[in-house]
Image 1 (cartoon, helix red, strand yellow):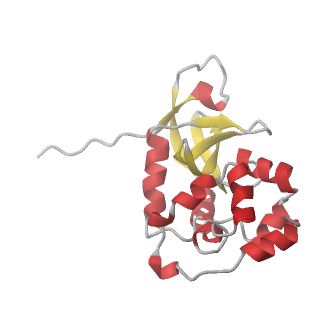
Image 2 (cartoon, one colour):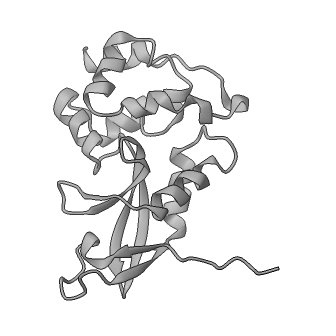
Length: 186
C-alpha cells in the first residue's frame, strides 16, 4: 500500500504583496497559534472541528483580497459565503497567517461597512457581542427585520446560512436584537 503524499498549502508571493521579483513564486503557508486561538474564540458555536474543514478549503483554493488598510486577507469560507478572514503576511519567505478576523471585525470589508452604515466601532461590537459566530447562530437577530437588514446590507448575509454547522449542544438562544436596535437607534 502506497502512503499518501503530503501537499503543503502554498500561496503566490505576488498575491500577498511580496516583491514583484518573486512573482508567481509559491510560498508555503504557516499559521501562528494566535490565529488558531482567535479562530476558535470567534467561531464559538461550531460543531467539533468544523472550523478545520473550512480552514482546509480556504488554504486549498486561496482567495486573497486587500483591505482598506493595505493588509492582505485570506477569505475563510467560500468566496461568496464568507465567515471571516486570516490576515496574511509575507515573512522570511513564507506566507504567515497572523490572526483571524470574524466577518464583522474591524479590518474586514464587512466590518468597515457596518461602521459606515451604523457607526459601529470595535468597542460597540464587543459590547453588543456581534464579534463572534454565536451572536448570529444563537440569537434572535435573524428574526428581527431591522437588525437582519443592517447585516445583510453590510455583506454579512452568509452568517445567517451557517446554522447547519452549529453545535446543537451550544444552541441556547440569546435575545440580542432589541438591545442592538436600541443601542444603534435603528
